[in-house]
Length: 551
Image (cartoon, rainbow, N blue to C red; front, top):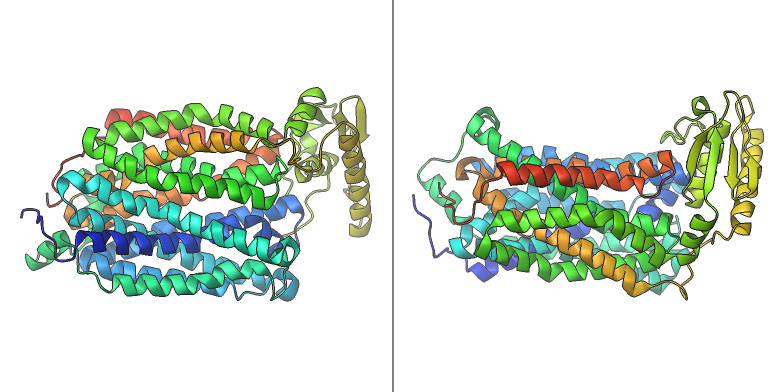
């Protein structure tokens, strides 16, 4: 077989329909991630602030956890029945699940049934998105001319930023229109529901656009010749020649993509709100600006890969990502809340505790596990968003929080009945809050002292690294795999990386911070995964530019 240069569907229509439909699905998925703080308050109200934040971040990851399942299900559909059929089913599932989230009762209204229903809908979302991306990327690549594949598939990559921009824009406008209190309300009139309802119109447009598309030329030729795979799983994962490519795709590309991209566009917002005390709408606006900047950069770096190759562009993005994260987040901290940064330098906080007294500070079932003196002290600091160091104290000694020269003793709540435990914990929390205030720790970021443009510049550096990595990735993955199993073989490593490594990045990084007290410790997660990919890409990833997609 030979590649066809004149597809039946005009290339402009192919790109527009694929990118727009993918953007709408990303919108559906991203509004959940952008509303994590609200989700925490309205669906996990039975937990404390730290546990609720962890639970909502974990639920964000649940949607990603099911993306590999969707990749397997719809990869098989795409390789046996066609690319078009697979992603029409996916977009319908995604739109229905997203709209339904807006109809859910909150925990205050329905109790435990609310988070249970939410988990179910997140699973449907994740499964649907698992089949979507591979189909769109492959569909465009299989239509594009060989020397313009990077540029063409770059529009599929930029659809992620369009979806994120749309989600953040709708949230920002709704927040400003109804006010923060009405927006966060757990009742049926809560403004947070509006972004979920908006999705139904976007999905309708997406379905209409995609029904106008023909099947991709490469798959049409396979089908006409009777050569489409009858057993995509066995071919993709049972043959070493194909399985080796799956492993290369995962370790050389997707480890970095999952960990780094979600650090930049999701964890950074959690970090600014939770640890730097930046208002939600301001953090929202900063990520929106970064997403707007990313849109043309995806296409630019994908186009650049048509000229100099896929591998050098993506490798450069990984290297920049590894070397920029720690210094970048430190600059972000100083710019976002200079008063907090100064207080942390002048009056560091330590917790002197018996190591045996320190356990997990949260349990998503809501059981009261924060009862030891160490846990009560650390939970108070975590809820305040304050970093701290831990030093060992003699065995059996109650924990003490030291804020400069001030010492605040904690209390052992084991054996106390719930009302007494609540009162004792509140007393410790109040004493720690008062000591932090006396030491100059601010309750929130001061807009007059905040350096907005410095914060945006840091996010811009992160964005350049993320787009250099992600821009050429679609075409590189398409060119890496043979046509017979392309949908299945491409989708699984992609969604393992973005789904498991990327989706759980926010909760893992946040939990590392809570456990260690170091607000930067969570960055080791993206740094390690990105470094693994950089080494694997350098050694094992072949250059794929110019390969035939019919081979």
